[in-house]
Length: 469
Image 1: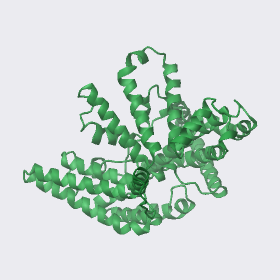
Image 2: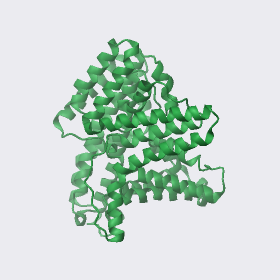
Image 3: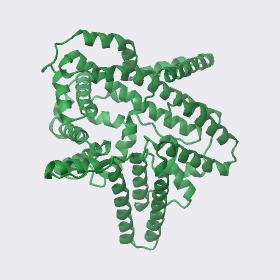
Image 4: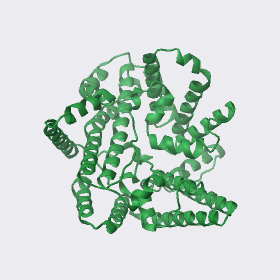
């Protein structure tokens, strides 16, 4: 089940909202936990028992660490932390990387190991990272160990953030799990954000996807320079509106149940450096790697060579986290290398370059990075890049490029404008600038909802891109 599924929009979600509204306060967490378990089991019901075991294991691990620290047994607490982290990482590694590991063993040693493909538990990457942050925070006294099993279970499984985040720390949710405020204003704000996210997904990302998947299905010999660039640009915008749309929907849903989460995207395509881009893109994941990998390794308060090591470790893990494919590992190292160049090699040079040049350069580098992200292999990624820069391309512009560009031109222009903060500023001014604008706002969101429903009914189902991670 996905947020852009009609069954979610018209059955699951309204039922949970209605029950949550009439449920007495003590029963609201029970309702949300049951709803989250139904949501999880809708996709992979065979793993419901495994999820329960994971929750129980980490719940008691947190309690054990807290008891050991209270008993002045730091080594025992450290052993519990290491054991718990290893168990969680091995579980994540088994589902995401076991087949990839066997493939590479076979390739290197000429072996013939085989494994039966297993479906991944939905959201396994995201709820595992949430659990790991909880364990580390308990160990470092950044958060208390969860005493209430119901609240801890809801923290792990809360359905708005279960599948693709945002990754929320337990310290952020702890008080909200105990008590939270929900009124018409917060519910309305959440509903509005949910609808904005749904529109990003259905009206923009899915439409851009039609062009992207059409272009990438072409034989490599039929791709012109313009066609290759069009495919890359539509993917960059599609991924942004798909994932930021999901994040908006998740945060909006959480707000409709009284939870307040931080934003996960902050207009990344206005960035003037790679470092700024990653401060604005998938903020919760970047914060996770900063807080639980980069800083514990020493962060930037160590020697230059150790900072370089730390960056390479973080970005290697970031690439691996995204999937079992050499493309993602290369993609992670690509960004690690760019950040090292920015920080140490080109720092003084970049400071003297005009802002618009740095912005264009950053966009170009990000677009190149997305090629490695969407290509099925390193070879196909380099082949696509060669077409983008004229090597072996079928001319600069051909009829195919004109055909696809004419079909997506309007949504492409709207998407470019929508990816800029000026769009939100103008919209807020029109829709919330006065009392009369309230009526315009109601009409606007009603139209968006009808367009989204129409889009979901006439198009084939399209899951969120980050579900695969």
